[in-house]
Image (cartoon, rainbow, N blue to C red; front, side, top):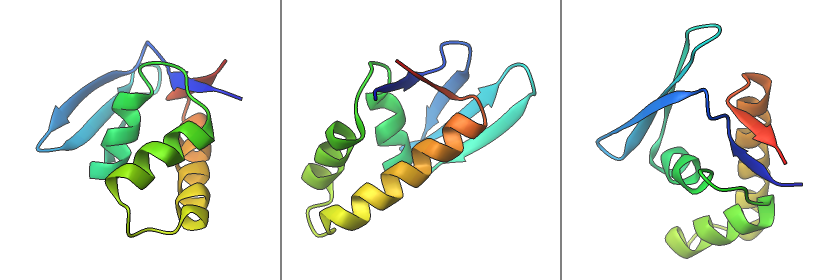
Length: 87
């Protein structure tokens, strides 16, 4: 399964963090530095493993298993809020 940004979501980077606005519900979501990194990466469709690879390159002190768990939780939350779509 691949994930990509919902193109209807407005977003902006602010000091290495991202602010997302879902237009239908006016939901505003703030993303940390790692979340913002993934969000930018999701301008194109990627798998969980591709995202974990990106994070592991950036945060090499983190265990892959923990990155996998955290990334999946991040994606699940963004999917629940209609900020991402599956391709």
